[in-house]
Length: 137
Image 1 (cartoon, one colour):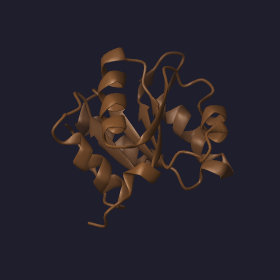
Image 2 (cartoon, one colour; image 1 turned 180 degrees about the vertical axis):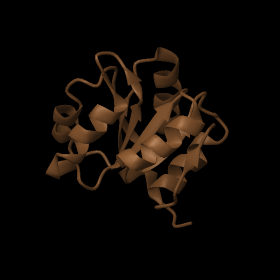
Image 3 (cartoon, one colour; image 1 turned 90 degrees about the horizontal axis):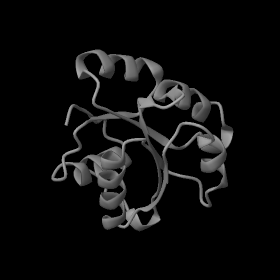
Image 4 (cartoon, helix red, strand yellow; image 1 turned 45 degrees about the vertical axis):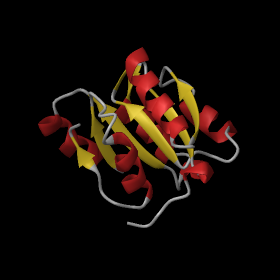
């Protein structure tokens, strides 16, 4: 696995659950990743485009108020400035259903909830290194 300089990694986390947001945000920051949080799917593309530099990885909860992660993904993929961003689905939904759906939609990876504090840092490093990560926890 290629080593990734996490201090040069910029993340956007789109998560409406306070617990999930806290875990992901705190862990990313602990890893040295510059992290911005958003609690809804609204304005994600504008926020990501305003980030300088643009996010290299975007974590998107599938179940968001007023929208869902699939719609957010479509918006991200339609924005040329975000074409290089890795988009990771994060959900507590049934993995047997959601993993194939997330792959078909064009997500780059899948991390199921609850987020594992012990596995999450390695999952992030693997995703950033280009490895396929489709894991239920």
